[in-house]
Amino acid sequence: MEYIYYDDVVSWLPLREKTTYKNKLGHCLCIGGNENKGGAIIMAALSAVTSGAGLTTVATAPENQIPLLVQVPEAMYLDFNQSEALISVLEKSDTIVIGSGLGTDKRAEYLIELVLDRTKPHQTIIMDADALTIYALHQEEWRRLTLAKLVMTPHAGEWEQIMKKPMHKINQDSEWIHFAQMHQACIVAKGAPTSVITEQQRYQNTSGNPSQAVGGMGDTLTGIIASFVGQFPNEGFIEAVLSAVFIHSYTADRLAETRYVTLPTEVSRHFPTIMQEMVNKK
Image (tube, rainbow, N blue to C red; front, side):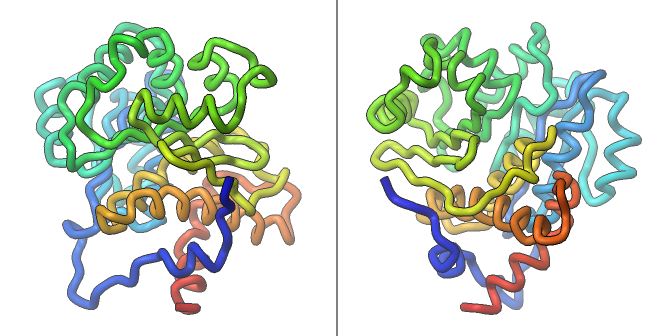
C-alpha cells in the first residue's frame, strides 16, 4: 500500500498555460438528480465547476433546472428524458458523472446502460451512488461493456452490495485489486480514510477529518474527480484521481480549523483558493 501526500499532489497539479481556454480543460457531463434528489447532482456540478472543469453540463429532471441555475449558473442544463439531446452531449464530453441522486428505477437503469454502451476509449465515466446500486445487480453483464476508463466511488454499504459480502470479510488489498482488474476500473473506496484502488496498487489518503460526515460530501468528491480527469494529461489519469481525493479532504481539513462541520458546498467554494496555494508552491 502507498499513501497520498501533500507534496506529491503539489507536484502533480498541472499549471495552466497562458493561452488556455475552456475547451481545453475538459467537458464534464453530470447525469443524475431525479424529481426528489436534485441536490446531489447540483453539488457534483458545483464541485466540478469550482475545481476547474472547462465546461459542465447537468442532465437532470426538469424540476431541477431552476435550482441548478440559481446554485451553479456556470453549468448548462439538459433534460435527461431527452435521449437524442443527451446522446449528442455525451459524445462530446470528456468525463461523465452518473448516479448522484439518479434513483434506481427503469429510467436510471436505461441511462446507466446508455452511458456504458456509448462511451469511447478517450472518455472517463465516474459511477457514483445509485449507479453503483444498479451496477451491483448487473455487473456480470455490464462488466467491460464500456470502452471508456471507469472510476467507481462506493461507500461501505455500496461496496458490500457490489462485493456481495460484509466489509469485515473483504480483504482490502487482494480482493479490491482483483475487482479493479476484473472490471478494468479505478475504485475510490470512500471512508475514514478513503482508499484508491487501481489494477496494480492500493493508495490511502492522508487528509480528511470527522467534520466531513455530512450528506453530499461524496457528491462533491465525485465532481472534483471528474473535473481533474478532464484537466490532467491522459498519462496522468491515476494522479488526477489521487489529487482529487486528497484536495477534497485537505480543503475540509483547512476549513475544520474553524468549523465543527464542513458543508459540501462550502468545501467546493474553497477549492480555487486551496488549489492556487498549492500551485504557488511549485
